[in-house]
Amino acid sequence: MYAASSAGRLRRSPSLVVCACLLGVGVARPAEAFDIADLPTYREWGAEVAGTIQNEFRRTTSYTYAEGVDLNGDQFGGVNGYSFIWAASVQFRTLNSQWENDPTAYNLRNIIRFSDELYQRYWLDSGDGQNGYVVAPGSLERYYDDNAHMTVALMEAYELTGAPRLLDRAIATHDFVLEGEDDYQGGGIYFREGAFGNKNTISTLQEARGAAMIYQATGEQRFLDDATRLLDWTNSHVQRSDGLYYQDYRETGIDDISNVPLTNGAGMGVLTNLEMYDITGDLAYLQEARRVGYRASRQFQNTTDGRVWGGGYWAFELVDAWVDIYQHDGSLRWLVYASQAIEFLKDNLEDDNGHYGRDWHEVSDPTWPELDDWLLIDQAAVARAYLYTGLAEPPAMPGDYNNDRVVDGANFLAWQRGESPAPLSAGDLQAWQANLGASSGLITTLSVPEPSALWELATLVGLVQAGLRWRAFQR
Image (cartoon, rainbow, N blue to C red):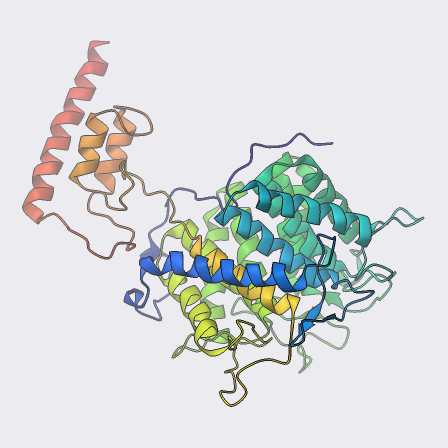
């Protein structure tokens, strides 16, 4: 049993350490297309869809959900009335975002009891010790990609709540997914238990991310080794030269005409590289996340209206990825990509009853204004994308000591008052001086000091630094 870490927010916001202009990718759309004032609206959209899921899909006297609902309000699909575990894993991540958006006891209870009931009903203890989540209660089938999704959902929940049993279950799930890894084709993880041949990109890449998340929670080297090995295999076997990932490593050859890159593979590649950057501080991981994220925007997103290709169960991973890159490098372009994707959904895919179809690149038929039925996985993917984008937070800006996203004279005054991280230190003063005049781009109106004012401030800094050196000498 691992001790709980202190509960924190789902997304870490490391300091802004890289200037966007140095990493070699161009801005495809103007940042002016995005308005920071829209973020609360996105959260409202997400809360509405999440509420619909609770009202329509939640099973009676249960914390689990049905697979689908029709116009009569009848639940259907899945196995024995329960959703498939893939849909459950997407809903799990929506519950995580609901709690982050509104950290009430009710939303916390939904996460914990949902996890408990999933473990009770979907977890299969095998005689051979290979235990994992089945596709649905009553089934014996277990898919490695499904379980990799559960590893990530459980770790997100643990990062938010600090509940030890969520970490324990994530580790057990990770161990099951690794049962699908062997030396055939140089490594990688199969798609399904008992089905050999092709190695699956999603199983491998998602579990690399899950392993990295577990390492950050436990500090155990084996999990970092797992994450590194799985990511390295993915990069060497299924990653194209442009950064995107083929669906499988196939016996018929990697260039099999049906072996196309998928939206979720790009998202998972970005998110895994960001996890590795958080662990190691190696800028190569951040650069790779940016490269894949940008190439995905060219491959999967319409540059005119922002729609993202593919089913929502794939596309939401890419929206998550764009938001997370923004939270690492502060470049507003990533929020432009994410916001355009979800605004297209709201404007074009939502039916008159607030339900969503599967494919995010389609436009609803105006002559048929309501769906006959709708699925949990499709609603949860939309709710997650709305909430996750709406919860976006910029990374910390060195030298910004009053959190207004601008480094200016006000921050120097804050430093003088001892309000910087290391009060009155030369290091904090130098950070302010190095970033003087910078802003995140996350401000609708920005007052930039005139050159003469910046010169005066720089002169004043020189005098203050001289004073600091004199005091140090006197000691």
